[in-house]
Length: 238
Length: 222
Image (cartoon, rainbow over all chains, first blue to last red; front, side, top):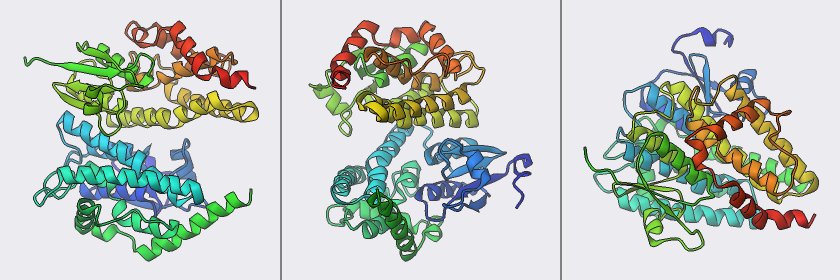
């Protein structure tokens, strides 16, 4: 597929990603939620395309959304852009206070759940123990919020039966958390102490536009096991 | 018009709470400021931000908002005059991208600089100068990141001032020097000249003293 003509095509949406990336998946969920047509480009972790490197020269990472030739990086920034550009099926509420609450929780999830989880996956020993502890504490707060906000009528953080921003940001946990536990060799998921969170995960997995996108656990485990070994191998050789 | 009650919990030396002061002043919003002692946090603060227990917290008609960039967006959406973020979604995305870059990458590098020594410190200085070069790429020929007037990213980039004061307090060579970073150097001077912004930086002498007390010993032991 020719990349030089991409910039000329009015309205064209392209997403650069990795099949295994939870950050990319979030963006896909946002696009699918709004029914936006897009071209997906699978990048190679070991051989990043020129398009990726020029579209995201600062971080050189996926996801990158390219709309009308304009690139946007960072999953949360991309999701807000999608919400502001395509008005159907709003992801964030229209109310400024509700928006602030959603953004606050998205930030919290990134700093206290997503980051520690990632660091726990790629560390071992004392460093990993520290990160697992942080992750558990983050999960406790998430469970508290789930207890406060969710019930039989309100299945999602977006309110009612519809997913919203917080669900999309937290959504990676419903598929990747088990993988991280298995590959990293630790446990954070506990249905007994996290009943509301587990209910939320079960409901999220069943959302019609989410379900078909979830990668099989064995495939994710095999891949992340390789990455973890690779990264820790490098550290050991120093 | 309904009576508005706006409170800001902050500290005089936090760049994050100073950001909120700029945003509120740019919009002409009247507010009550509460100076917190972070070694002895008030019950009010702990009540308004039980999750992170941090400043800044904005309380609008009794409802609290935390996290400086989240608060700034809330202010922009609630008081719509003198917009802080641009109208165009792509430009908004760019402002958010770079504000995130500052809060994640720049802050991490700045923290490391004050505690690192020798070669490691030099490496961190190179890193932060590269980051500032990247920011120059976003600023280009403009007066401010926001264009003719201060915007979201200018306010978020206030933290650069803390680096400049810190390096001065520790007797280091200028990191943000005119030779290496002419574009950002010019921007910084315009920022500090701005009538609203300059009211929202810590008093220089007090700031220098605090830095020396906090970090001076790490330099003395070199």
